[in-house]
Image (cartoon, rainbow, N blue to C red):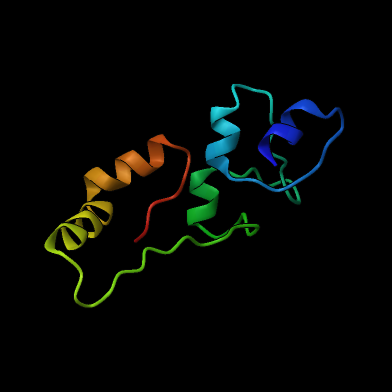
Amino acid sequence: MAKELATTVGALGMTTTTVVEQSRGQIRALSLNGVAPSPDNVSRKVYTLTRDSFLLAKATSPPAVAKFIEFVRSSAGAAVILANGAVPVK
């Protein structure tokens, strides 16, 4: 999808904010009802065209899995997520 959005004049489609940011200006995110798709607007639920991502693990997962999920939910993990154009979990 990202390649087609970037190379097709007038294309309209759905992708992630991360892809938009990594496209170096080839893909532009559209505002909805005058609301820009910023991390702040998504967090405040004023930009509503979003989708959730899930991390799933078995109850008997290795300790490294729990450590990774703990990192993702930490402030350091949130910084990495924000740096990649996504909105961290709360």
